[in-house]
Image (tube, rainbow, N blue to C red; front, top):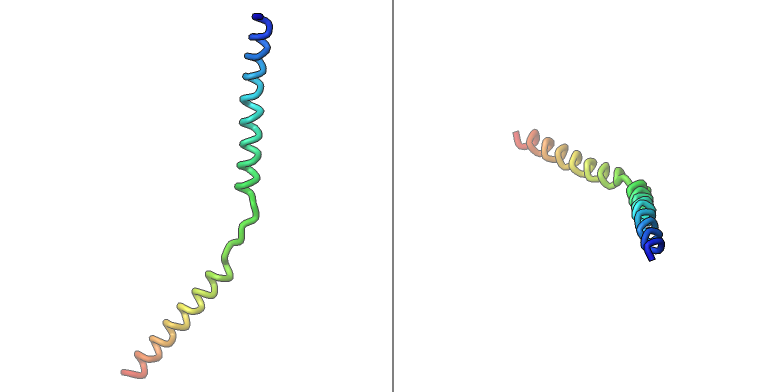
Length: 64
């Protein structure tokens, strides 16, 4: 009976790091996934901002 308990304890101590390694591998894969940078959308927004500022500057110079 004690031999079986010792085997189960050893198995439990083996399962813990194996499960931790699997979870770490899953997290690593998720963290390294290919995400779009969103640069195109950001640059388009900056272009709209710049055009708006140009129009505002032109209207100020026209009013003066």
